[in-house]
Image (cartoon, rainbow, N blue to C red; front, side, top):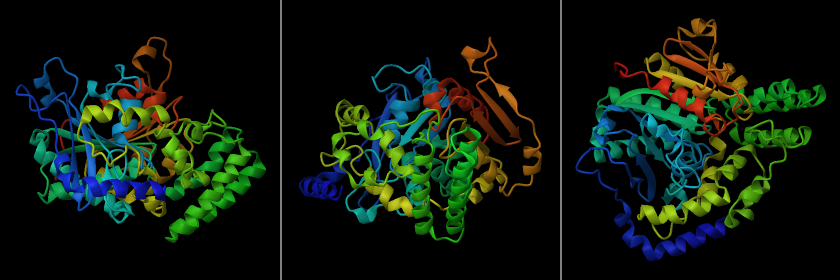
Amino acid sequence: MASNFASFLTSLCVFVSFQHLFITTAQPSAHTLIPDETWGYVEVRKGAFMFWWLYGAETRDPMEREHKPLVMWLQGGPGASSTGYGNFEEIGPLDLNLEARDTTWIKEANVLFVDNPVGSGYSYVLDKKALTTNISEITADLVVFFTSFLEKLPVFRTMPFYIVCESYGGKMAAAFGAALLDAVRKDMIQCKFVGVALGDSLISFTDTVLSYGPYLFSLSLLDEKALNKTLQLATETAKAADKGDYHKAMHLNDQGTILIRNATDNVDVYFVLRHNVPDSLKLPTIYVNASRLSHHQMFVQYLTISHSDPLFKLMNGSIRKKLGIIPDYVTWGGQSDIVLKSQYYDIPSSVISDVSKLIRAGLKVVVYEGQLDMICGVLGAEQWINKLAWDDLPQFLNSSRKPLYAPSKLEKKETGAFLKSYKNFELYYILSAGHMVPIDAPEMALEMLKNLLKVTEAVDV
């Protein structure tokens, strides 16, 4: 991919003098402060540009959108695209075939997709040195972005705001949420921050890695011999991460990936009922020979899934033309692999303290987990939840779960999820879903969102 970046820089020399012409956005209509959709770029740092795309809530009267909350969706990876994968594959108004999605989240909220970190999706950097390398740098960029976004659309300053995410996006959501809480308290940002929802999120790398063996063993995907090997390697990985030796931790994690793949006939770690999924065959041509594919790490697989050839063609074809502001030297997804490489050795860092901070502050904090997800599954989540610094944690752990039903399954009482909750903290166990809950269980994902949005008052800061 180094040659691709060199080509990018060559093309950039021709267009760089016009870069600021692209930092524009569609404008709301005269009838409402919130348009059907709008998009734009924010230069969060010199040479680092973040792309965003907002959809106004689906209401009978556009003026009613001002009575709906704002939901920001953050994608995982790191390096996957919110405006592409999250939008067209998961929760946006249109699917990959540009047909209306019945379970789109704009039925309940104004939805803001952000290509983050810079270099993901349509976001881009002019020099690789401008890429982020850790969660603190990602957080700083998101604060700059959101401040600029609220300046462009100040109507959202007084509307309930939620951050919802998936996978590595959960680390970003927790860290950004904690930083946003501080900014609101210091009057640096005017925002009615209400809550976060962490979907199959990488909050604690050590607890997540230690869960792999027991989870796969419980599903008969490992025998006792393979379980012991997996646990031994996972323990070494966790020890390295806890000591702050993230390079060693990721090296050991890659070994664990190979061990699990060989022992399980290449189970799909994002949906464990599948095996031998040829993800590389779905990739657009420019990625097939990329060096990142030679390692087959679990985190690379997420980028593979989220950059399928049909989505790549859509985003670099008709959608690009529609948006009209994407620089000629920018390819959707063209820098995703260098985003992952730049961020890779910060993956083991933990944000448990940030989640604790949000709960203690009184924000609504939701964790939702797909039953069939291994890579950031419920066993790991339950372990890091046990480590939360929250006075009411014992009461939460002692609370009983209740069954939930998707609207279309209610009459027959077909269980779609279980919910465990106490005060402002909730844990959803989404049945028959893998890592990408809105794809596998779209109705239950929408019901989870509805429950999250029932909170209408922001935390008193």
